[in-house]
Length: 519
Image 1 (cartoon, rainbow, N blue to C red):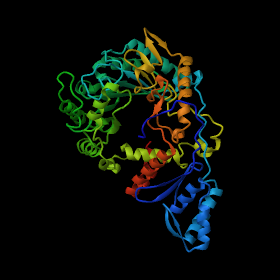
Image 2 (image 1 turned 180 degrees about the vertical axis):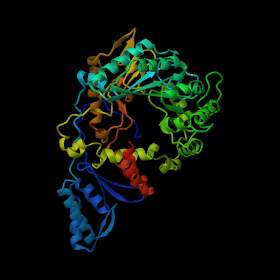
Image 3 (image 1 turned 30 degrees about the vertical axis):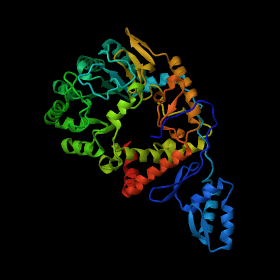
Image 4 (image 1 turned 90 degrees about the horizontal axis):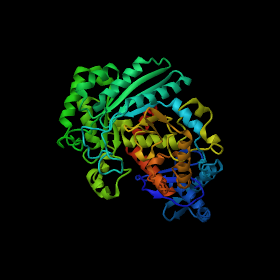
């Protein structure tokens, strides 16, 4: 994380220069923003790059190299004159080939059209139902807890008739794109506390044959009601994600609502029952969702799940968006202090691999900033860099609404996904009426994009952004971004990535051969 930055006034687009950087072990590299390539470098080459932007001050050193056997460059070191002249030739060659050319920002003037919203509704891959707001746990880090600015949990249950109305609309629109797949997911609260709704949706889909569509089901559960309903989930081949943070101590933020006691033993017994009664289902369909906080570590997470269940969990962090100002200090002390000491960060990289945050960061860096990862023949035949000056792009990494998924809350609100605050309702399904106003939605998004574009134009990471616009405080009119990067911060970011690779040389080969294919 780079520290949030707020920007209030218009600004010209930053011109991205070549980035020479050095790792903690003293190795030198160069990133060419124009070529999108990483090169091994040398202190002299880095010096020449930096000094060329400072009135070509290297010329004085060059003249000395013609007169002396050795040159002394303050802040860089002593070198034989022949070595300096060699790297000067290399610098000129790379310069001639455009390696130090300034790269233009992408054009972030794209906007969303109402037609795009309608297309997305016909192509969406997943519909998520917040089955109920009610939950039998009272997790301290839950987004319904006192720490978060959100509406209170009212124990609402989703209206089955309204949900089916929305589901039928999506399924009907998909007839224009046959042979698609739709994932129907059940979320909470604890979704199994409204099992009749889950059963009703599955029965509705089963009764109304949809030959043009392959439908699959998934459910995220805290595990407390699995003993009662696992037979149904197995029968209908549900993908089941169980929320568990590790051993008993790691799981101690997840307490029972009735008596505030640990839920660990109850959940563990239910998981063991599922594995014992349905071993094939457990192996193929059950996964674990683990929240990282200051009561677990990468080491403890990996050792617990691999030894007990033979699985590697999906890792997520406690969200720091939407924290109430009054509780920010208490939140930090409770969940974040002493979380993930530096010695733990690189532990179990190879065991957790694509789930490990270090591997995820390395993979993203090479895919975003390198020019050798192609996710389809279109990009291979017509690389993005060839048309970058003419194409228009949306600012930030915000998903086009409903392109990937659509989320219906228990009170009937429609949102682009389950992670967005309830203040960003895009539509609704209430009293058997679906209200999705594509023009209103596009106006909302486009106004937000125009607002944040001023910030994006000054960011070295903007062409490869990882922030959702709904996490920026955009609704207040003054957006800020925790991933904002100046040139200096971007240089440090690249140094950190290569530091990780230097500490574990074999990691690069695994990332190259396995990580991209796993995404």
